[in-house]
Length: 191
Image 1 (cartoon, rainbow, N blue to C red):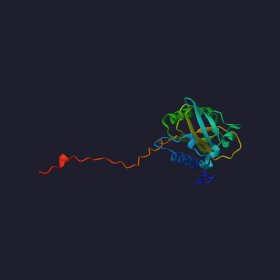
Image 2: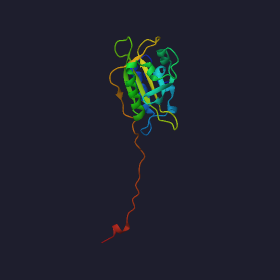
Image 3: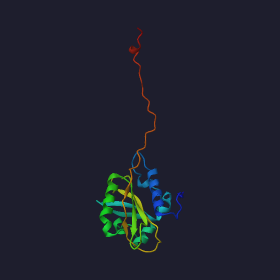
Image 4: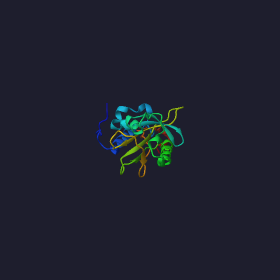
């Protein structure tokens, strides 16, 4: 079932917000979701710009899965490329710092984007950590979405401050706790 809460023609910021809401809905006991819990049909209109990253070194991540819009951006198959390939060289250090923070703290991150040759902010990048599997590289899901017409390769820049969100909410234990109280017969003596 496809999530249609945000129309496909809506702006990039709304599509990124929808993706983060979906990610948060899967959080359990304060942990991000695992990759196996992600249903591509529920990502909705963010799917063409969505990706899964593998952390390959401090501050470096490779695209394990890449939507078709990312392939259009680089002009070839994007799978296997470093995420930094989508960004201007001047933004590589900042991108590396954001990746490390998200991987280390399990906090979601969203940052507005600029595009070469385009005035103003044109979209955004979302980085959403995934629960690590035993023996596997740390991963995250995310999306690079923009409001530009498709069809030409470009590089993006990170614009403005990043919004680092809180980690997934710690779910409260809603079970009722019973306490066994044993009355001491000596305390009820008649005087």
